[in-house]
Length: 396
Image (cartoon, rainbow, N blue to C red):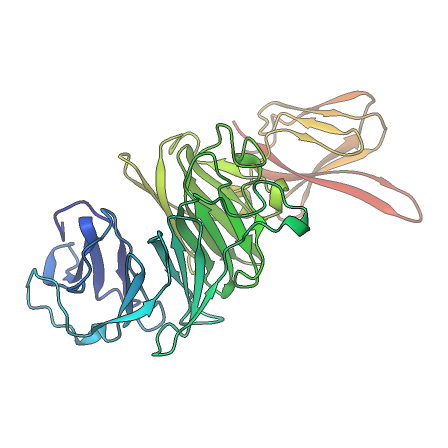
């Protein structure tokens, strides 16, 4: 094991040659490791000066250069601009060389609670959250003239806002998830109970919309919905996948649609309802890594959007009801209209088709191999084609 302590945050360089790891109270180390996981070099590198670190204290490293580190301290962000120059001398004391108090936020009665950095479009941007709802965007964070913009969503009496439309006064921002290819797209996660849990932006925080969807019991964030802890955004082909780690497990979706966002539980039979603290994703190989509280780390590689979206039971607008889903032996289609239905595999091959019998049709799917399928229910005329598509899962 490279370090002893309560593990916190980590970053490794693109070539996987150097690792930055932290343990309790904000102690950060630059480390090299051999192929067997044994430590070959070390230097503690957090700055001398900060004294009010959180027990699990964040830091971020610029993902493009792997050479700049940002380290928050209450209302200030320290910056080290040349990590490559730090020699691994196996010393265990914090350092001053290379560090500067680069960004000062005017926080009255608040403290920095989390920090995230963009990768591209634009680069060198930070999103900084606090323990009392305030959220900031810092552009040109690598320069001596950073541009600080508050992007908190406040109550606007003239906009017809209701509770949940704006950031709660006591909202603790635990994480800001940033799209790796578009630094203007982000999710802001509030970890408190009894406050609305997550908001979404596509314009760098100029505007925010709700993203908690069906995980919120009440529209204002009240009730017995889970505590959100961490989110991640992962491009996947032409789609974008969104993940959120919560106090009741891991959830995912492929669309953020405000109050109508539908989050589906992932790993119900493996992860279960354990408290999940962080979820990280890597678009290059569709890797998802989940850190739980006391139940280890889980990993998976997404093969299809349908790994994230699982439809349990669907009621469609034209009184068509299809269930169960997943199905093993039989599929029931309820409809008030006689029309054709077709079942296709994901390669577009027609597996089965027949006509619906009103009011209920029982379809034998026992001979269909296990997998993900598309069922179409539609009516054809000379002038128009009406088709309803539904993801169907066959399990054995």
